[in-house]
Structures are given as structure tokens and as C-alpha cells.
Length: 385
Image (spheres, rainbow, N blue to C red):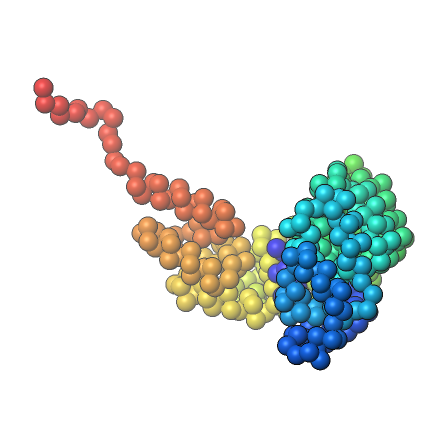
């Protein structure tokens, strides 16, 4: 979730981490291609269409989204289906996979078998592998840099990362496997050195590093220059090494993916909005790192939204984490709390804050307290005999 927020709020250095996988061999300019005339139908590979139809694959969906696949002269429908079935995928699963990732049928069966072997290095069994392919077919059928991918998997295993974490990298952080293993190794070394330089202990370094990587593998896409620049910026702002380490841990390494210029703008805005000293601003940032990664327009919108609901600057300053909520979420939660007679304007914002799960739990407690009947256990009961 935090990663998605960062991608929306910081357009600078983060853009470099949104490296798209290389375009397919054939340009997808026919994505909206529909087969409505005889001349158009001739352009499609009829054998491919027939084979997919027999598998109960939604051909119309493929034509609408990735029709260029059906124009390929050479496809491997039967071979790919055979590989999936050997893994234990049933007919429904196979059809779903091919509908969502029709590019699978133009992948070399040899390359797919190699990919299968690679993924089995981190999967407990074939059943688990099939589930991953069903959930992330595009990741599985991106069959390039396989030797590099294998070296990275082995490196992560040697580092001490659990296979379940590495499998998550394979499905949701595929870009880190495009890095040469030596580059990832070098970045790990830089992170270790940074941790020690900030006052971290040798004894805790491995645990800290593995947790950081499991929370944010994209940190490996950084450069050593970016890490150095960010650390120097916070030191210039008066943050101690311990405080920088705190921020690094709280932000799960995303600290290195923020642009110093954008951070400076956000901090300057917060200082003016809350009318606080540099020391007070530091304390606010340590309490709510969101003040660093949200852009000025986002912060301004959220503060204005809270003020419109009658919440004061003093209340926001006391509980700055409320800025992590969108205006829509704030309005919804205030409406629910008001239905119980809870005046958010006059009270603390703690009950407004937190994740959806935390808010619902707090709301349930308040609701139960409001409905609880008054009962005096020592009062006599009037019982007619």
C-alpha cells in the first residue's frame, strides 16, 4: 500500500523504478481488433483460434484486449496447455490463465519449462506453483533473463530470505531480477554499510536488512548516489543518525526513493501550515513520515479537507497521522462516528485514525459502549411473589 501511495505522490526519482517490461515482439496496436468481416477473420491464425475455443477460452476477450496475439503465425497452444496440465492445472484454470495472458501461447515451450524449473526453486510443490501462475500469469510467462533470474534467486536464498518472500518478488517485483546479480549484491553491501554508519549494530543488521527487503524489494533499484544524496540531505536538515535510521525503518526503505527537492518542499509547506519551529517539525516528521512523501498539493488538499470538517490545526498537529487518510475516507469516518453521537470536533482524532481494520475495531467498541445498558448490581430488584 505504501509503495502505491509513494508512486502517486513523488514523481521524481520514483519514475525510474517503474521500468516496464520490454514491449512484445509485435506491437499491440491491434488491441481493439475485432473479427467482424471475412477479410479480418483471415488475418487471424484460424488454428490458434480453434484450439483456444476448444479450451473454452473467451476469444472475444482476447480480441478486445490483446488481439495481436491471434495474428501470430507460430503459436504453441497445445504445448503450453500440456505444461500447465502437467503441473496440475484444471481446465478452468488453464482457460483463465490464457485469457488473462494470451502471450503465453507465443512463448517457447523450452523457455516455459526453464521458467517452471526456476519457480520450483522457491515453491513448496506444484500445487503452490499453479496457484501463483493463476494469480500472476504475466509474471510467469515473462521468459527472459532466465540465467540472471536463477543467479538472483540463489543469491537471495544465500542471503537468508525465505522462499515465500522470494516467490513474492518473482510475482510482484519482477524488475529486480533484471538487475545483474552483482548489482543487487553491491546494493545490499551499500545498505549494510549505511545501516552501520547510522549507528545500527552488527548483531541486528541481518534481521534489519531481511525485513527491509521483504517489505520493499524495489530498494534494490536505487543507485549508490541516490542513497548518499538522501542521507546527506537529512543530515543537513538536522536529523541525527538515529532519527534517520528511524525514518528508514518506518518508511521501509522508501526514504531512498524520495527526491530531496520534493521532501524539502513538503517540509517547508508543513512548517508554514503548522506554524512550528524546526525542532517541532522534526518531531512531527518522526511521528508521521507521510509529511515527507506526500507532495504539497496532496498535503494541502488533506489539511483543507480536515479543516472543512471542523477539525483544528492544533488537533491535526497532535495527531498528524490523520493526514494519511484521503478526504473521502475522513468524511465517511466522521459520518459514522457522528451517528453514535461522537463529536470529533471536540475530541481527540485517535478514533478517526488508523487502517480500515483498526477504525472498524474502534468504532465497534464505541458502539458497544453506547448500547451498553446502565445496571447497578447492588440495587434491589422488585420481584412480585
